[in-house]
Image 1 (cartoon, rainbow, N blue to C red):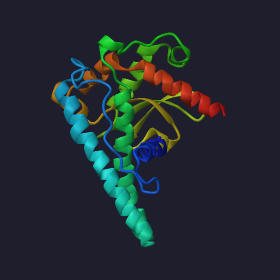
Image 2: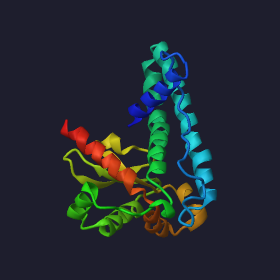
Image 3: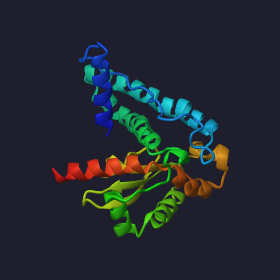
Image 4: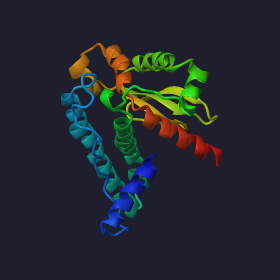
Length: 227
């Protein structure tokens, strides 16, 4: 996912007339909806802060870390290259995770929360007994995160749906899973709206899940595994 994001960014830069040999800077992606589109589940205030401040910080941190890595590689400083890896993991994961998260969401008036018949619904029904039971499993996993992290609906290496958590900004891909749906369990994602009652946030976010996006990711992941 991270490599694909980088490739798309580089391709856009090339089309704009940039030198393709030059590493493209990562940029903050635009949202597909206005900041108030997810209200009352997530307020416009949180969405704007989350997108323009928190996600933007990960993008800036990733670009800075890559510049440091480039310099360390140029000087053949292996120790510095190794030391930079935690920064790449944290800021790169933050950028990738949030890019997925924004696409996973959509306002209720535009179909948020609606899981239609199809192969994803069939897989959820078979493995979890329905969307409501899946949400319970995922919410409990999210509530059990100590500190900050993410809860994920994924496709695992066996080709099965799975629910996992990752700490901090670690990516689902870092443990061999394909991310389909992510719930941000960092306090900055909910605290202004829900204070310390984060379980209400976990319960309500299902009202704005973009199941079309989740289904697309599932179809692509299954097709990729079949190759």
